[in-house]
Length: 290
Image (cartoon, rainbow, N blue to C red; front, side, top):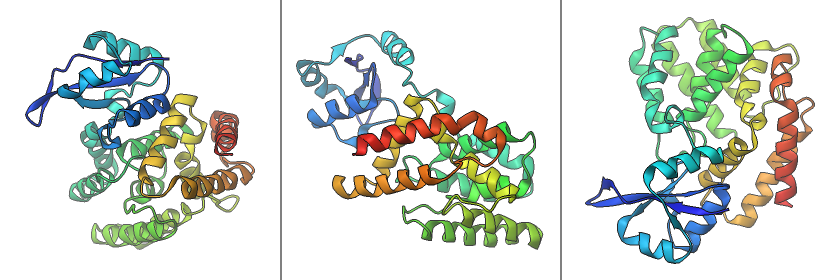
């Protein structure tokens, strides 16, 4: 396990910045950065941006210096690197292209939603999550119903970190905006209903649209260990204002409630893809939470 730092060469704010990474663990990287007094806001998905004047102190505390090319290779080999297409800041254009395939006459609404998903306080519930849910839907069914796709776009369109209230406000936003966009009333009502169901992720058996949306929304639980850890870290960052003891207790309750779902995933294809890994990930996290 080691911490690496490349040569400062990225200009911003009147200085040059370097990248600080771990070759094994984002948790290790966060711990090293905190020990060195680097604020979490300098973290950018798989690395910290570090001003040039701080580099000598980081090396003195154990960071190893490498050139930029080698740093990228180390990060890629670790499995921690976030590809460019998965970076929140780079997803506006591909997301808008997707939106326009099923709502071509409402491009301004798509732009509004993309802006909402890019709000600065989001760490997990951001554009990368939106794209991941859309891609998970496409893994489950070749052509997801439009109501499910629209519910995906709206399900966290309002996000303040308040369970239940966020889903209700997102549902009302969907009903308002889609009615304004000229969608028929039946489809508008279905989108609102689906968004509200994401408050508990426990649809009734046979409610196929809701099962699709919930399974896709929870697909992160069944990803490989580094991806699951990034999800856990991002959720903690969204609740950075909550003291550790309170967050740990609340998060443990969430994990237990997910493990009580039997099965976690309702669509057979989703169970094949993610059920086993999800239970392993959740059980391991619960053990760490104590």
